[in-house]
Length: 150
Image (cartoon, rainbow, N blue to C red; front, side, top):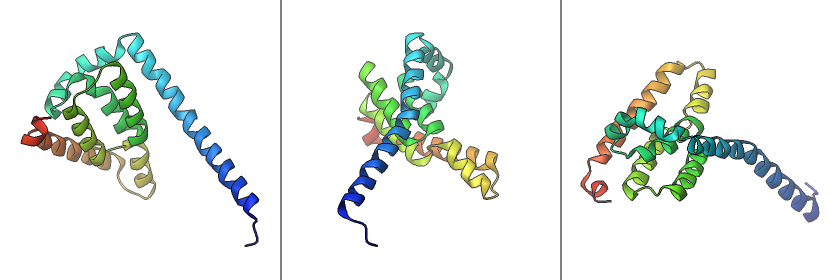
């Protein structure tokens, strides 16, 4: 290994830029979709249709969109969506805590489940099991006294 410092620095910078560009390819379209959902009031309509799910999990309706994005796309994109939506309509600390708990249990359901299915696991079973466990843990956490006080 005879690489000079300039070569190492060049590799670090180029690798970092490529990673940032890869993230931008996903984050920018996602933010555009969120803007469209908010501009055409589709987010509110979706929240109204899934209001029962919010109540079941102990969340407000405003917390559903970042929760759904996080479950489908992963924690990074879900957190980005959460930050963007929180700028427009601030969420409560309770909603943040419950979304974090749900994300911890079940995030990026598409890519993770696909990885497991490539190894031979049952895609439907893994996805449903992860969603049920995350919902049960979130519902239990929503009823904890210290979460209720947030």
